[in-house]
Length: 267
Image (cartoon, rainbow, N blue to C red; front, side):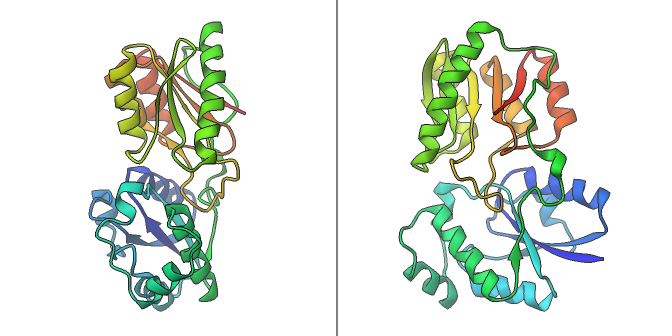
């Protein structure tokens, strides 16, 4: 049985993907939680360990002692939490000193480099699940109409521009206008804010970074996203095909169909 380490962020994604991988592979997971808010089902895992996000040395020692050579990073590493109550050990402090900036993505790449120096490789989040990525198609009974595609085109351009400056990856649009941009608050709160500003019928567009590293924080849409869309009575959601994860697909599609919401993937 192959041993795989998992660096676990927030959200339901880590549990969903771990469950899917275990169903199709002979693998034993060793999850490491970075926050107190890690999904409760992940925390129940027999090998689960909790570390502060700055304890890079202790995390690495745990993986080495567990004879782990590969790890994946799953879940949200939220901007508002990454430096909140962080406690760096001496290795984490050294990494931080050598970083060119304090962006969350830069810190993660510094940690990845440290793992590599210790013989641990970080594999892409879709390493075991090729089918988990968005495809270039409509998943739901409802399709966008001609006017929706005009709004989606605008949203795609805005989301790409937003991701280029590493501010966020989600845009809320309506009637060919941008209503809200994701910032430090994260996707769900940005969607709720967009709903407050734009009312019913908004379209949510989420794109990957221009040079998306498939090892780190891949944008994700799943059941919880659809539940948020239902709250604001949104018209639909768009994900980037080939570069974004669509998790819990069967449940998400069923929920979207029941609420007359479209889900599409676009290039």
